[in-house]
Length: 367
Image (tube, rainbow, N blue to C red; front, side, top):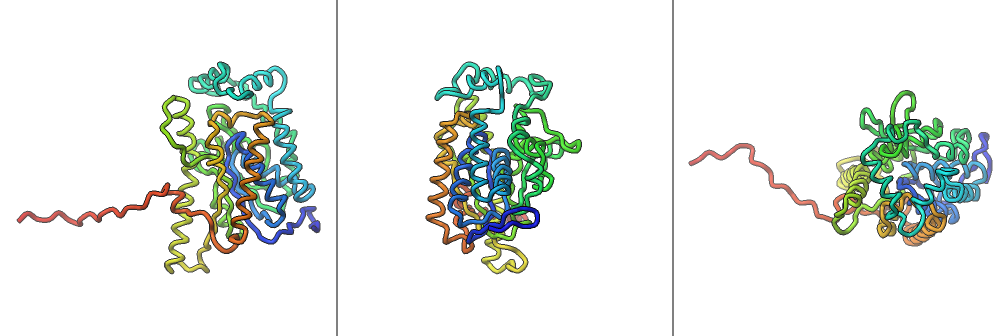
């Protein structure tokens, strides 16, 4: 590897890809495992990353670590970050003790304290139960991440999504403007935290409008290959019947909605290129791939997204590493040649599209 003028480290892999990293709280440790395996494998160069919430944190931490010491530095930085989330935590003192009571143990989601906190967020806003806008995550991110280094990073492009509260539109923040506020905005769940204001504009979690956003990778990255690391299950069998399970499933559907719409758009463009209706010199074909943690994580309740115990995070990391190794073994040769995700099946749920009979232009006259 050689250093460039701005101290960035050149990639040395055989193929170039872009990554799209979903958010999902502690389930982002699965994505950590995927990234760790990709960095260890050394055959892929990461040109750009689009991330949301926990996916955005993984992206920023990876970028800083790589700037410091290449692939090894990125792997070490990701390990330190997730370990700190568990051991040091984002809460200290008496608040940390409460946090551990709520989010530790096999049945923490059934603890009285967790149930009380869950009830509170449904009947009071963070402006009521947290009027001082205390967010321990803010201090922890400042402690763990050198945002000045992230802004100077030129070896990969970063795109972090958030949702504009006032307009309902997606906002994409770029690496060169990255601060702790941009990262907090991407992870701002409105029932837990007050909206994050940047330049007078309030933002909520990016997952509502792009989890993650794919379109920046079409326009600002040269690689045709986009590898999605998905941690939110698209499908979850069975009908949720408790109020909490219903709300959790609504959140999963909502946070996958924008992604499925982008799948539909990509499939549409690719199909028109195949049919000769669009010229490839004017429109770029995208090769989409997916490492689907949703299936592996579906056995865990949505409440475990708040479980920060180190054994649990390690368990998810190992699942991610295994999934990445399996993907590389099966599809490395496909990269740069074809997409391996059936986009139509992904956005239609496997249901064949039915042709709607055309409506008559005018009613027939009675005889």
